[in-house]
Image 1 (cartoon, each protein chain N blue to C red):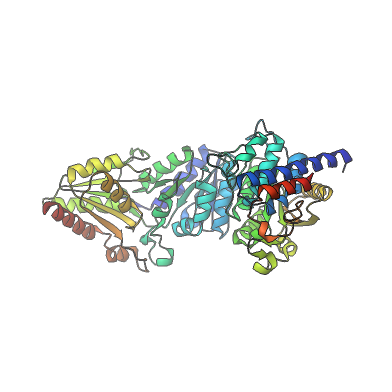
Image 2 (image 1 turned 45 degrees about the horizontal axis):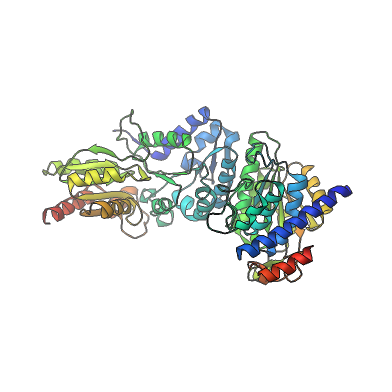
Length: 314
Length: 272
């Protein structure tokens, strides 16, 4: 299985789209080599705007460009895009519903060695709370390419969460991204896992492992955190009767919260949330961090066994 | 300046001041001080400088105006109504439920608003983005923005200042409505922003200091900006907060308080 970072797929797709759509402009805050917008910058230097290390002004400039018919893609690390420039995204982009795409890389703890100051664990939560914002967390390189292409055509603000780490490509090349739709990747009736981002691949591994123990676990990829596919969540939860969420993000405000909200209002179901448990990240290799925070096959399997026991003991 | 033009601008400014007082009294809420101080600047832009068409408010070729000090919305609303973007009677809906005239400018609701603003420091960045778009598209529209002097305390303003000079945006002109007062008191006491002229100059802008109530000086500065290549222009306009209404002039308390009907009557009598 080949491995590729979603940021790399973003950079490649963006450079390709630059050819097709002359209205696309790209803004970066001195991180173009890391966010991979450098591909676009090399191909279309006139339409690449380096904002320097000034994320607030970068978001504001993107808003202004959008009012003039441009399709700005804005990139920096997720922690700076959504944290430092939150007010600019809120008031200059989401409030006037301007056509700005925020493609933030280095999300989550797999940033690794740079440590907790650079590991965004709250960006989904921040973006999901904004009216008019679409929030996408691609599961792999294939989905990233499809989501970026969709975002370029869609009119309105979009947040795309991307990672630094090379992760397995799990979706087929012909995969079609459907905005607002969760995708059932594996059927199962003992429990269901709803996952986003790199945790989708981990969820497939956990389901495989648990199948050898006799547990049939459904795996659902939830690439769009907003608008949220409540119907699929309810449909799958009804069949499985036990639910686990998995995300490389705080369990507060992200996928775990979105699923909890959907279930509590429609179909109360035993739920375990796997993610960062209200703590900051720290330095280490991505693998060591994923192990420490339980964002691996073992951690997810343990949560699935636990929720299955809760369902059975009712 | 040709005399008839001056007479015309003076008449528009008087009508705009009257509308500001009336709409604020009617809404019982809003910011009179910083609206009245900016009347001549906004009047000069909409009635002498900018190419805008009320019948086609989204024309890609139009000149832009971004009210970065978004709380001065009443002066922009009055100017747009005076220009014909929407009926003057609608100014009485200011800040009321369902109104297109939100407390701070909302481009999604009201024709003629080029950017939604209100969170200070953000409008100038949007104006920089619009000016970059103009350069990319080789269009000759010009972008204008109005900042408060207190607003220059926002760090984002200086990020935008740097970017505008870096990208040589000679199609961008900003004003500072330099009335010297902010909510908590004199700007010099709340947070020293001076010397504003030296600061903007050192950031790479052409800086022109004028009397912000003198149409001749405003239009001359705008002409100088138009003839300047390779850098943006900042026009620092010395103004009087609450200008034109005796009991509001230079009074910090009139930053964000609307006049009563009696006070409005007196103000309108003074404005003539």
